[in-house]
Length: 175
Ligand SMILES: [Zn+2]
Image (cartoon, rainbow, N blue to C red; front, side, top):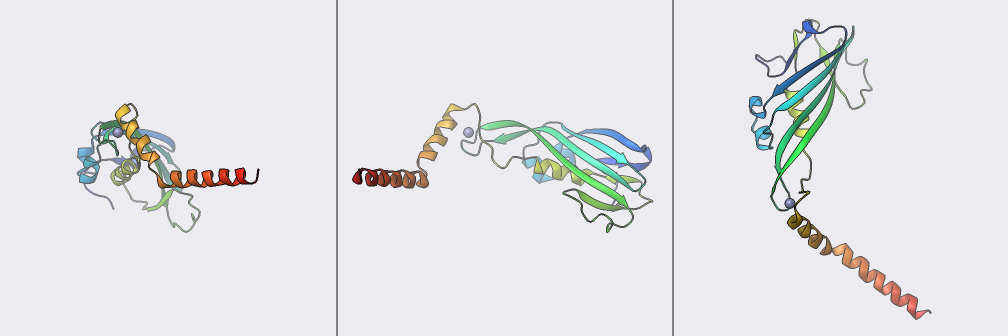
């Protein structure tokens, strides 16, 4: 599980009981992952960890914050977005069966002899999940024009209006 020279790693011996706050600043290129660099993460990536250590587990809440250079889905204009993501992972000492109702959080079994937590993959995943499904311009009038035209062309709008028309005709008939 533990890789040599992990990019984002928390040493367990350095953690105190209770709350610990640890911040990392890194770049997408340091992950050596094409998917991440191609996604448009060009700025500094801030990964903040709230680590709560107890007798039975180490609970890690990870928050990512960065700016990404994206492109508008409609007009392909560049769009800069502030992206944030959150992910919670529980590293549990001992058997996982005791924790059968894990909400949405991830549970991992942690070896008592483990030296550190490699959170590189968790940060990478959180970044990818923070990407918006749809990207559109906000301050581009040309792009907005395009959207309205497109919406007018929608079939169900036509259907709705013709249905409305026939209803009106029907009403007039029985007047
Ligand atoms: Zn656009």
